[in-house]
Length: 538
Image 1 (tube, rainbow, N blue to C red):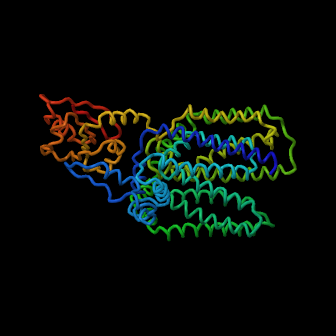
Image 2 (image 1 turned 90 degrees about the horizontal axis):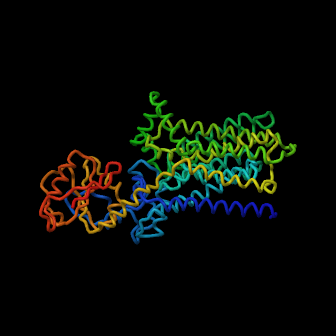
Image 3 (image 1 turned 30 degrees about the horizontal axis):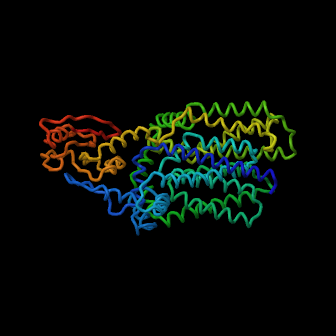
């Protein structure tokens, strides 16, 4: 190993460690959970299932047990697969989260989900560096690309979201890497391994999220265009043979996924999400509305309201005017061809995938950025490749790291992205609400739920688990409340769902005598989130 390569590896390791620290820093500030994150833990670790009785007290320990791995119930991967077959998701992410939870039985913590995402993110960084190096991106620009990705608000948000999108991004990057290697690998024996890895990647990616299928088709379309442009009389047959074997590898991978998880076809063709996505995709009337929606999400989160554009422009100006021009190499034409092919392949992939997701994904505000997760790193790489092409045209692109040490200052610029965007899925406002719960642990807690949407009870699981037991009350049941504990409680905390009978139930609860109460008690509204409102009756 040369001194140069050793120093580059040390710098790369330091950058990866720094970016992991950035993720941990923002994860530490995560004070609450998205409702889908509760679903992740429940689907990965459920035991008896969650029930919603009416006018009964429930020990929260029994609820907590549905979100953790109990002693002796770890590594039940077959059960997780069966549970997911009842819903609309593939099982691989839930099995990964279940494996992580099995290492910490009885523990319910955001850090278990964060750990799974950070492992995926770490491997994603390695793949990003490998892809950029394979495209002969100079070392400094490779580091710039990695820091740009690790500090981007959209990618940080995906890493904080305790769902399958960080893992989905990993498989997408691996597939990009494999297709790029097919274009450079000349050893037929080694090519066999690349084809096998494509099938394996398709198997894992499809079992992580069905949107992987859209990404794979989009990437294959971009790669096909590149193959067509590169055909020659001498190499035409070899290119066609490579294309056919790659197509067969994809087919084998997806076929293996369906065989391993037959419920996938039902989910896609007859599941409620599959039907909703198909209806939205084939409707022309929503194209403008959806395009504007996702463009806004990208601008606010991925582009950080323009800060990403500013960072790229500053990087281009600094490199253009501070780096000495380099003599053109004899291999410059070959490098330019590789660069053009990569820009074309990634451009087509991003365009097709984004169009398909724009037409089919759920419109959930800024959190819909999750659906674009697989193309976020390739999009950043595309920007860097275009910048690299511009610098090469000006003969201003250095090919060695040692000539550009002062340009490492560019690595600080992506931090500006964070000042212009917002990191999602942190819920800092929840810290004060949890503190309020802890300060009123002696209160009697009532969960007044709407029987039409009982699944939304678990959106407030982090609050429910702060108490020893809670009283379930169906809002549609307006019969008199006669529970002795509630009648004797000095203070009531009522988590009420939006429903027309809320006022009547609150009036009933406030009319209960309470311990030593001489008059009707006061109702104070503490906070409201989504469809839930917390009232304090004292």
